[in-house]
Length: 286
Image 1 (cartoon, one colour):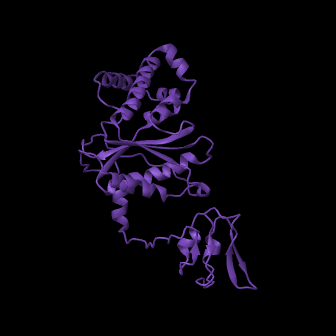
Image 2 (cartoon, rainbow, N blue to C red):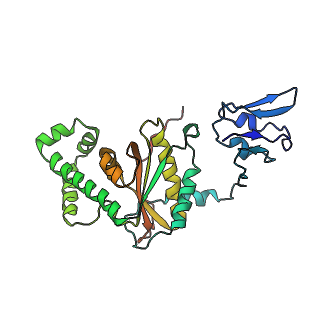
Image 3 (cartoon, rainbow, N blue to C red):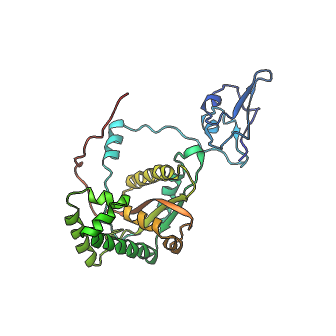
């Protein structure tokens, strides 16, 4: 995009200059005009969003959508955010395509490092595609159960981050026993029969790809919650997908991508009535 300032509309208020993260706006005092240095511009659109006269153009010919901060009650907003739970019971009802598109649109609006916009979204609606992931995850879970529950396996598990995390839990053997029992039932204990699964990934070389995807995922899941749709982050699926290029290819993820977030979504069967107990976040005010 080639951003420029329409000099006929610009009133030289200067609001855009200090808001530009790339120092791409220059003021010519002799000509009394602001201009955008194309080589410095990262197309973040902050200048267009802040301009009171809508004087910034990006070469697309499309207008920037008007926006005004909605008047939310802070306490109600706090309660809404605090009440986000991981839903694991879904109705079979499909989520309409337009709702999924609105969810993606919110994710697209979230901040990315240097305005990279480097995320890719893969939406799994096909039962076959979801089952490919489920079977891979269940195979991985079965291996973990057998591996960590014996002395030699525990010694080797200490050599990998995931294994060390498991072994730090004093009740890990009991929990893995419960996991092993659940796998025998043949139920979908990965996506919980959710009608849709979202995978967010970036090229492996993206320095801040993980953060960019997490920001987008959080916005998307809160948007879904506002529409009465539950969601749940699925860490095991993220691990399985990152371990298998073949699996990523099979379900349509760019094979050289790294998966940063996987979450299941659908209409919730349950209604939560209380907030959980959580440990206090350690905070230092420096």
